[in-house]
Length: 149
Image (cartoon, rainbow, N blue to C red; front, side, top):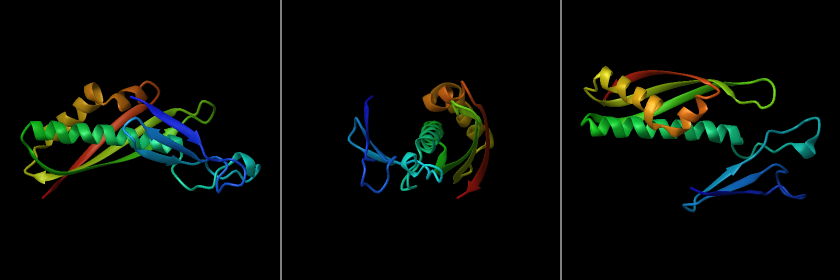
């Protein structure tokens, strides 16, 4: 897996702390920093997600992917899956994630709660590289609701 991240924030550009990531598969992700009222040259313009927001989103995508795949492999009629992630970070550098809560909403026909709970646990404990890695610094908790389709 490869990725190239390039700074786009040269003088005269819209954001002095903008970055573009190009993945090995040819996809592009924009990132930007928060505005810095004290020293505007050090801040961004809030034109794109922060790098840490992108990391959190990647973890959500990784675990949601697993949950859908596990439920499908179990021949469950899953029709939708979303996960809302809320997090806390350390107050001093490095400002790593210290807590992450993942609240899943899984939609389908007659989905057994035990199957959804198992899919989330398997993702969290075995398959999702992103959440397993983040779990080294953060307490990760999960919850779910099932919506009947």
